[in-house]
Image (tube, rainbow, N blue to C red; front, side):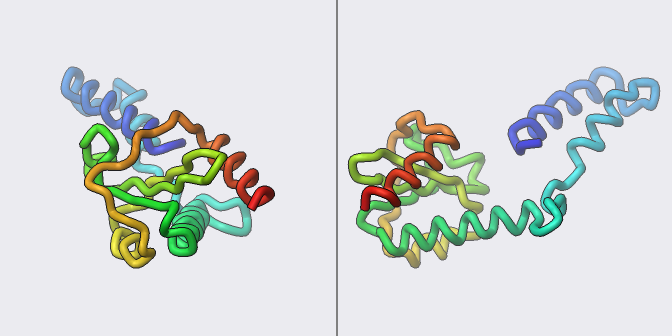
Length: 147
């Protein structure tokens, strides 16, 4: 379950509790609570937990920023001026020549590391070009084979 789904369920659960109260007669509310509270960080494929994989992902992206600071950037705010997901995250991106933009949302706890990469911190993030997670992988692999 992705965090956005979890947040939607949390929102729905809070509304239902406001209307019906926390009541075992409304079994779906208890199911929602279990889903909301379940941590995926410790779920594993047998080799790595999701938490470990995300830590690797962020570390690798920051290393990519450090090795290409002239192509990278990061910001506390999206291009519309809003804090990235309420301020618990920031946006970081790379402009891959002749290929396009890629971006990630590392946790705010990694902001100092982003500053250490040498990539510029922008007042607001660059305009998102509409790339999907699949586009990011495709663009990265294209960049590897063309540079």
